[in-house]
Image (tube, rainbow, N blue to C red; front, side, top):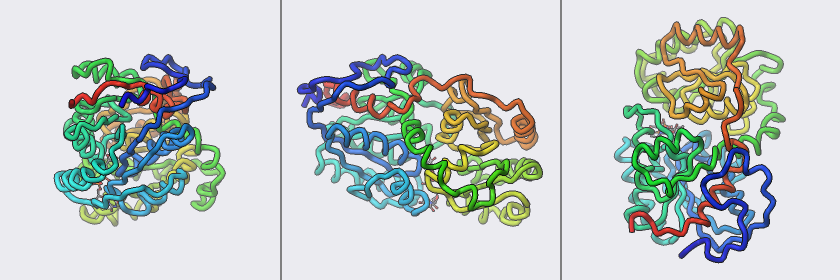
Amino acid sequence: MPCGAARASLAYHNSSVSPGAGSSRSVARIFFPLRLLHVVGARPNFPKLAPVLRAGRRVGVEQVVVHTGQHYDALLSGSFFDDLGIAPPDHNLEVGSGSHAVQTARIMERFEPVVLRDKPDWVLVVGDVNSTIACALVCVKLGIKVAHVEAGLRSRDRTMPEEINRLLTDQIADLLFTPSPDADENLMAEGIPRERIRFVGNVMIDSLQKNLAAARKLPTQEQLGLTGVDYALLTLHRPSNVDMRESFERILGALEAIATKLPIVFPVHPRTRKTIAELGLSERVDAIKQLRTIDPLGYLDFLNLSSNARLVLTDSGGIQEETTALGIPCLTLRENTERPITVEMGTNVIVGTDTAKIIAAANTALNGPAKKAARQPPLWDGQTSERILDALEEFDGAPSSR
Ligand code: UD1
């Protein structure tokens, strides 16, 4: 079915959207009925789902949400649906934890009958988690069109499970929605045809812009005794940092020094909580006086803390982007990033996990001048979800697998 056949008018017509082009959209849009199936599975997926769902609802797109259940804790999943104003998913595949092979296989097995029954025009997968590649692979084998949101990002570190998920998903998806020009270049260097790539901007920023004012009104800082206090915010969950004693201890060494200067708030990911205990590091963590370990936060509470932090230390991908959008200094505790635009144009500094280097970078950020965002990356303007819908409507090609 050529989805764009009966479209009356669209504000955007092709992939070559110029920076800032989304800000003045006012053209009424009438869509040909489009049936869209969204796949989400893990925490970072939810803020990418919410704005597309909302934009689709506004123009009458029929939408179904499948949660694979990769993340099942209320703190990593349910609270995000509440915070982001998303209705509970239509299907939950309840795959839970497991090895990468088990988790990926279980998702594929349980997703196939759902997508066969639902018969969507498009399946939308987001980010780089196991749910992303698992569902994309199911679709491509069935000849169902699949689009990847946040395509083209590359850390060039194939020890990261997320890098493998990104590379493979981009090879098989029919449409690739990129958040930054470097992602387009990566895809073309890998031989992906230009006509499958759409530079649409960063959909996470749609969520951030929509929710920032509400997040700032929450009493999160007050509840943590941080009102009027300079504090740092820390997140850690990458296997390369928290599953290995050497790297975790190097990071702890730096935190011991930084916590003498200002309190550090640390919402602890379940993976990290588990490995702190397994590696016998609980006493060392507890002994850091100004390190406040707390449960993982919901989307809005986290945004409240990140938008007011003096400094953010993280190994997350999405937080590198959010701090750039917020203008908050960010130290990335990894050797590489798949989001180089946050370094080139934003507030992000890649510091790795060497104790002395982290301390030096924190001192520079705290004693100033901290790295400032030169300007916002192009198309991080809150209109990405609408550009995604336009591109789905316009695409009238057959699935690349047919
Ligand atoms: C996953 C994603 C990662 C993303 C991160 C955000 C992959 C390969 N990784 O990593 O890209 O940045 O989510 O959080 O898809 N656990 C719970 N409760 C949950 C989920 C997990 O306790 O709801 C525990 C389990 O013990 C599990 C461990 O955390 O074994 C790791 O979870 P997993 O989904 O494998 O990967 P994450 O580290 O969360």
